[in-house]
Amino acid sequence: MSVAAILALAVGLYLAFKLVGFLLKAAMWGVVAAALYCLAAPSLGWPLPW
Image (cartoon, rainbow, N blue to C red; front, side):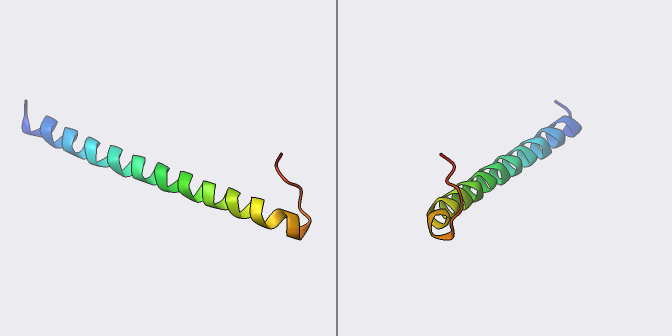
């Protein structure tokens, strides 16, 4: 395996882990936003999602 291939593999793995971390963080914030909405909707008169 050439040096360029090893370098490309290392960069690809690094970017894949960064992407997965970003997606998990975005999903966590989505869950937090949904929970806050479900808690605040009854007192603010907003419709519940179900």
